Amino acid sequence: MLTAIHRGKASQCFNGEELDWKELFSGSEDSLTASIFERLFYLPTDLFWFILRNSCYDNDDLPKDCGSLISKEFWPHWDATKTSNSNYIEPDIFIRFEKFDLIIEAKRYDKNQQDPEQWKNQIDAYKNMHDKKLYYIALGGIRSEKKEKCNNVIIFPCQWNRILRAVKKELSNITKDVDATDAPILLRPIFEDLLLAFNIHEFAVGEWFETMPHLDSYINNQSLVTLSDLPFN
Image 1 (cartoon, rainbow, N blue to C red):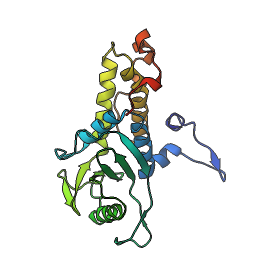
Image 2: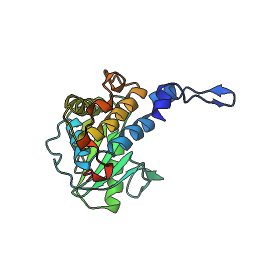
Image 3: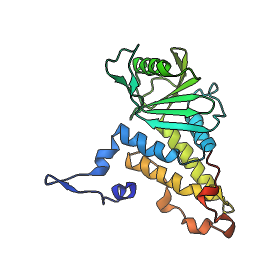
Image 4: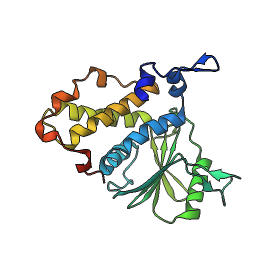
């Protein structure tokens, strides 16, 4: 679907109007969040966490080891008891790792969209259900590059462009390593798809998969392994 949108093939008439899906997607916070994180979740857990952790500012207090990925959920609805909301609480992403839990609140643009009251409500709602160690990433819309504390939980600022740079770096490493075998070369399509998702949402991706050598030039007999053999946890 991302390729169809990028190539202008996803247009369709609705009530006599042709929709420009790329224009609709470009400013959408929810489609950006889903498009990027759905693909990041395809990566082995340790690589996913390495990219996300290193994309955060002031990240010394974020553990380097997350353990295995237990569960992930987009836009869960949590009980609003003991919060300032009357209906429910809805963080963008909730991830349960073996060693800690993580809330991600994503904003589409770069400055002054994050709301500390929203952080507090989400943390309070989380504490209604769980008592595990919790970390919180404020992605996009940040006011500072310094971590903060909210209700005894550390809030780590992050920007979409920092995730993009990390993705480009990983793809570049794979592309340059002509002797890459097994897992690394099979991860390349995921990183290419991530660049496509960023491009559709109007991020400047620079040189990306259309200008890179075809994957076949990097495949050798030793690299022909099945995805089921990869260490995804």
